[in-house]
Image (cartoon, rainbow, N blue to C red; front, side, top):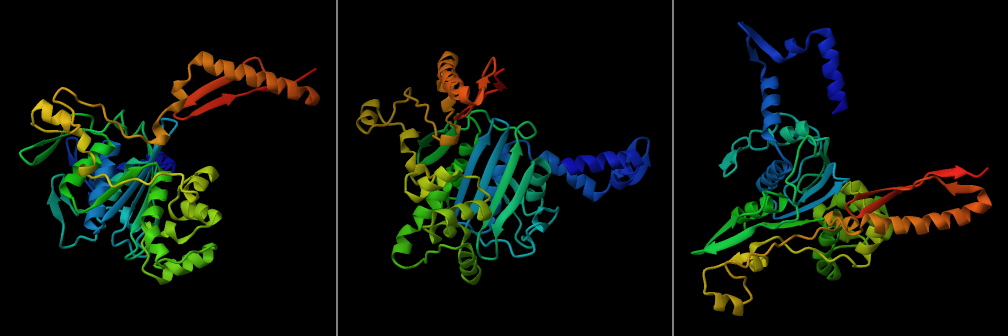
Length: 387
């Protein structure tokens, strides 16, 4: 993004930027834009929020024949949204990893189609996303092996709905399922898409949960001898290259802690802590279940009498529940501590630092600052040298 900004400044200084954007000057303030510039402006308009990005990625995966989609996400200090979008579709051939982000590049020469979101197959979805986000890259793919995308989104440039944990209300009337209320957040976007694509499975959670789920789904098959287990990166990659292995199957190919860390980093571009990898390997992370409506029955409201609903454990018409999806990375545990409680922790810490610092002639500064961010409390401790 910075490089693009520098280029624009350079072109402005040379007074040739307009020439690169304009095909013909029609006079009286009117111009005919070059196709590339018109495409760029349209692409910037196509993406208005994070949820728009999710829709475009879902449509691409559906058209690629995916049956299982894994979406791992987390926020970084309330400023950026990180998304790992992984599917088991037809994959992207070697040499196309960068080209797919260019305008008008599509695999849908004869099968572009219109769905409830509009026409799809123009070759503009990934191009539009790339213009609007800080980073999008294909972290892993190959022909017939599925695909793994990594996205880093600046929420000041591309906003998202504020409450990403709220699950929408699902109403069933006359065998017709409708989604109402709530906010148009990521979870609602996925559920709406699932309504139209009921043969697909959608898994949504933190990166750690996603990695653990991909691994758990195939564990039974490996116990039957369907999958080997590797301890070295070179042997793992060689096996993947020589066999028809989906990217979603790779996490089950090892029981080695270090190799799992390499898989998270090199295959999925996931920044998972050593403790997070340990939790995955020790089966301490509960696998996700597919995000299907039949698993959300507790949110469905029907028209039976109140007595019958109560007997079946279903909320009444006025018993609307505020159902929330629990994502550890966004549960804001730090906000549970009051300022004075954090100050008590700081006072105890300061006392210990000063005691230990005596032998090093070091003490704390005048004030230890703190900052909350989701599940993290950051302390800024200034040290001074004793005279």
